[in-house]
Figure 1 (cartoon, rainbow, N blue to C red):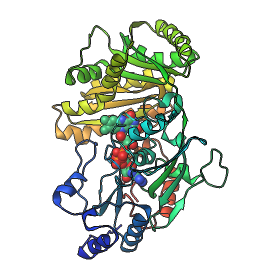
Figure 2: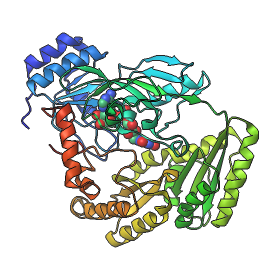
Figure 3: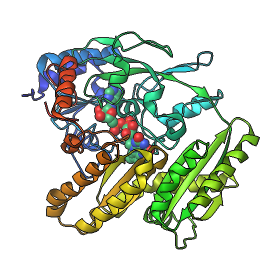
Figure 4: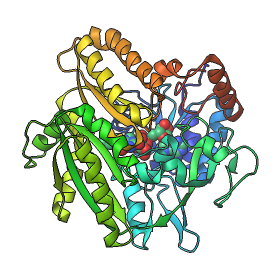
Length: 466
Ligand SMILES: Cc1cc2nc3c(=O)[nH]c(=O)nc-3n(C[C@H](O)[C@H](O)[C@H](O)COP(=O)(O)OP(=O)(O)OC[C@H]3O[C@@H](n4cnc5c(N)ncnc54)[C@H](O)[C@@H]3O)c2cc1C
């Protein structure tokens, strides 16, 4: 596809729709919007547009469609698959000004929000009313709800409560041609034709710009207990995940961390933590509406841990210890980045195959000679594998490592899984998509893309090339 390069006439049009200071072209601004949290990639946009409402976005999309200018939506830029990088330059739509919580409907357990609302801000706003929005990516303090929807993001609580997808009831979307549509209705049941809402969830900004989101809410369970279990073998920690869930209890978080991840997180943050011979940990949380419902859940978990030769179980008795354990877990991803350039693989398998996946990754890391840090949402069968570059040559990193990553993804497929549980395909994983998708699958997806975005101006070169 040949895209138009933005010129002064285009900029004048954008300025007529937005105010002058919402059309950014200074190199410092372009630089800021040229990166996200993915590896060390950089793509400069030609301009950054900062709209405030759907009508402005609609005018921009109509113009860009007519002139074949590419448009890449951006939330907070915390994505880990290069989703918001403007690979074909064009304009970046920075959506942080669409940040209103429009309405929290306590009677119907719903809220309508704009896409630029920060996940944690929303969680706190609903919690103040006794309501609960569970999806909680580790990046919750900075990522936006729009980005969460576009990636169907997950987080620790998803093992009990499901991912973002499970909370999206309806969306307002600006299409590539500039029309504004509602994808569904603000209802809990909907059997009315194709489900465009769920098609849009996880579409990574390739099918439309999300401008309003109706989210389902729950009642907030106020009581929780947190424990940290250590294991002499990572394989046993992984195997214990299924044991716990088969014991008749669904924890509100069931997270895996290998020892290296905990070492990096504690040392970089000066967190006092005593290490022994353990190789891996499970961070396990249970929640409840009544305090007396916590203990029976903990007992079931203890029994399961015992059966898997747990070495030690630390209970977080007070808020400070709870905070400390969560800080260790939530910070691993960001702190690994400080050690080395790395690639993060977001593997997911049928839960009971986690031990086999872990062993397979260990085998491949020895075979190819790379170091890994593994952690993640084990309760969902979702293991993040950080592959560190350290002193590996650029030649190995570019040419040999992709072969090993492909083998890791083949293992995922073999164990009933796929190549991304929550981070999306974006730019960096699309080269591996054929591991799990057949040619007919690609044709169907390309047909959908064409129907929504005939000139392929929305976030081009993401998920697949067209
Ligand atoms: C330290 C760290 C921890 C993380 N932990 C988790 C985790 O636990 N679970 C998890 O799932 N992810 C996690 N992530 C990944 C990331 O935070 C999520 O993918 C998040 O949803 C991205 O949100 P964002 O606002 O930063 O989106 P961006 O990175 O800005 O964009 C992500 C994608 O969404 C599209 N997009 C954004 N807004 C819109 C919109 N309004 N309409 C259409 N498309 C849009 C973009 O084009 C892009 O394709 C983590 C990232 C970091 C850096």
